[in-house]
Length: 114
Length: 112
Image (cartoon, rainbow over all chains, first blue to last red; front, side, top):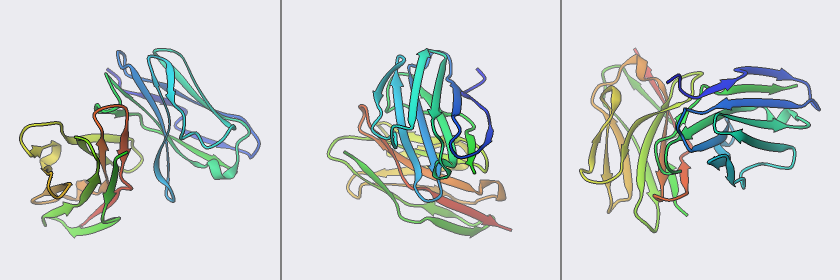
């Protein structure tokens, strides 16, 4: 398997623009996670899905952030409008049968909002 | 809910020296414990995990960790580090259900 795939790997945008991050989980994995990593706050769980259904979005910072999983092989994280404080590395991860199992991380998307 | 504390934010060591990265957790239930490694500009990858059984767990790249229930610790060790071990290391704990928490990370720097 190719592992978790994320695109783009790098994104530079201007404040106020819409940003869409994409993730393809490992085939057969039922759980998908979105994380944000910054120097100040470390690794934060934003939201996770089970069988394409959002289970816990309590980590989503505010209404500017939204995530969808239209099918088992694709998820998006959207920021609209983007702000400089959203600059971070965003990771997608997937796991097989539960939140408690090993999570497999993608390479991340490094987002810079100017 | 459980929580994880990584006691050292940075650990500098010389090549071929032993290293211990400390991790303590708190939980009211039985837990699973994990160590992940993040190399520069990469995502996290699993080093090792404790689910049950032997309290000494061996992982990849010569790392091992010991689960100590009485001290609620899961410290990571390696007897002799290499330059290539330079990375950030994350301890994580799960409640065997729907919650997984990551520590703040420990940056290991191996110097020649």
